[in-house]
Image (tube, rainbow, N blue to C red; front, side, top):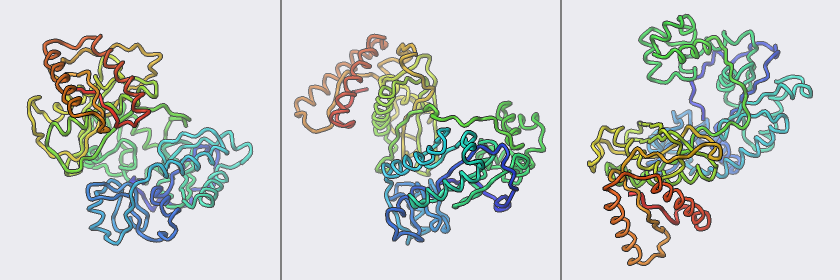
Length: 454
């Protein structure tokens, strides 16, 4: 669900010169809601909101629901106040992903130059397909009509010479529209848009620009690069913004884009300020992320801890380690340290200064494990986050005595380990143990067993 600013002024005929306009941006309209309406036709024309539970957020909303001021990331409780008569449905990602795969398999019959950036959005380079189709608009019309006929969902398509203009064109063509921007009109088109339309301009930077009297792309285009550096504090960002304001974008459509990050997060049943509760969730998230890294044959260098507070605001803090990692024994201690650093807390406190609604861990700086030298990082002590070599089943089959002995063993191991720094051998044993647990989870479920990590 796109929340990018739009302008009715640009939703018009810009001309019919398709020369060089080989980039299509395809964006499904209210995709999750459209998928639900497709399998429940009786919902057509009604305000459909994807997201249930007073603690959830809206994942998507039909255009009928948007008329009530409902948008993605809004708290469901707020949405219910705005539209109590709305149809609220749970998220069904398996269904949405399955529909997405079918839609993009259809598009792949035109060309394999598809860069899918989300479940409902992709850039397509149609240059090679023009030998058969002749015109980019012919391809766009066929995609829109065929997707609608076969899947009962609509999509909007932007057609341009580059990815930036194509995406802005599809956004402003919504819903169920198509917009061609000829090469000669790129600068004119983008300079009619509000400043927030530019990638990299969020609320904070928009406010900095406003203090300089800049609220539109046209006003930004009149600034010098040195003035942009003063406003943004970054030469790279200033240069990119200046190119964008001229309608220029050198990025290529890149099929099969490598994953940039792997993460896991969860929402608590109730907001919490308890450090142990948040730490437990970070531990589980760290295990899930580590297992995903190993499954994909990847290692990471950067760990990020994310929090969402009771007022729905976010905070993140990241650390790039000196060595790549794929082990929860390294990810979790790092994530927990970042938690304390983010909130400026001493490591012995038991209460957070703010109530937390969601917490999670992600890793980035990914590279293939087969071609990356892996040496466990040794920049933390186990008396800070004592990794314990204990596996705890979650399926309820262990006896009380067995669980007690394991817990005692874990505590003993932690007390013993707290007098020395973690060694390479320690961490290698933990990595081996985690790999063993991967096979157990594959057979019995990912929640069947966990590695004790302090």
